[in-house]
Length: 83
Image (tube, rainbow, N blue to C red; front, side, top):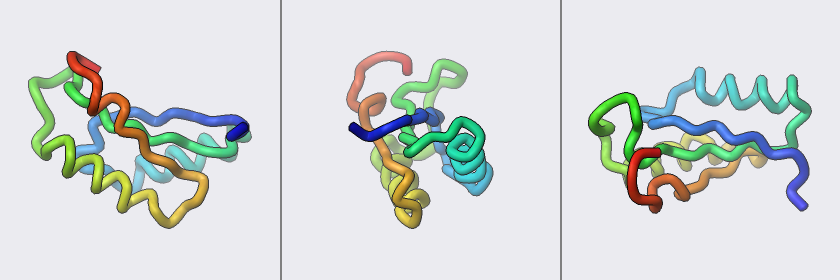
């Protein structure tokens, strides 16, 4: 098993340092083993993201690549409809 996993979802348009800090704080406070970053496909609070889904996914992968406790999922990007 992968242990205790937290999910951090968002548009990540763009992903930034506070997103990473929140994930690290969640690992410490909730004693998580990993945090799964999940960029949203169609955000419910705005018409669309400025960057394409592919670009936001790649930005998220790049931003999280230095920490083995971070993983990225494209689940919401592949799913139709509002995230």
